[in-house]
Image 1 (cartoon, rainbow, N blue to C red):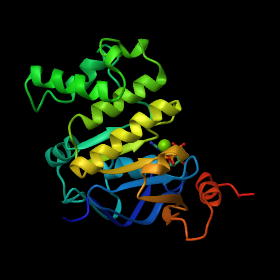
Image 2 (cartoon, rainbow, N blue to C red; image 1 turned 30 degrees about the horizontal axis):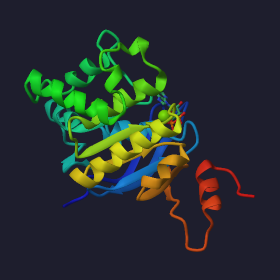
Image 3 (tube, helix red, strand yellow; image 1 turned 45 degrees about the vertical axis):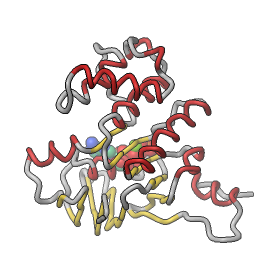
Length: 243
Ligand SMILES: Nc1ncnc2c1ncn2[C@@H]1O[C@H](COP(=O)(O)OP(=O)(O)OP(=O)(O)O)[C@@H](O)[C@H]1O
Ligand SMILES: [Mg+2]
């Protein structure tokens, strides 16, 4: 099967005069079922890359194909259709405040299945993320980590072929981070869901097939060379020198 994401020479600037070029001739290939972690300094352009791949932002320069579609050629309807086949976990959750955790997940299935089926699947997804007891809670009554897990359940319940996740474990304790890791890893193994995961969280390295660092607008491979200690590898991901 062809690449889930194929970016060639992707270049993006919000406002060239003030903030300069954020992405500069960036190349990226993501295969089905592959989990790729992207790290990088704050402001490096990680979220910008995710929003471009998710058709939430228009391509300015370069080639970008996602799930077989050329993003430069897509009209509004085709963009919406593509977005609906991608699972998104945003940095700020984006849950609907007036709806319970369960209803937030159900909502993401309403265009696909019956209400009864959506409720059953939502319950299964939330239970898998350790939230069985919080299904009826409103987002205002959920902790940051719980909201994060609802966002992951909402993204994965649609069984996407591509997951775009922005810091999905940022506010999670180790147990909850493990639950999210397992959910992403299971989706990759069982359904060949490819995942592009932006994170500074070294705990996610366990499930990464590749680790890339976004620097100067491009991606650098941080795969450990043989003989290199884990400590040095982890340090390079965090952007600091190993002792
Ligand atoms: N809507 C916008 N308009 C103008 N500039 C923006 C916009 N969004 C982001 N930027 C700028 O583009 C650059 C990249 O931002 P981006 O959000 O992609 O970084 P990031 O790597 O995700 O950072 P962080 O780790 O802090 O989330 C930053 O300099 C940011 O200030
Ligand atoms: Mg960001």
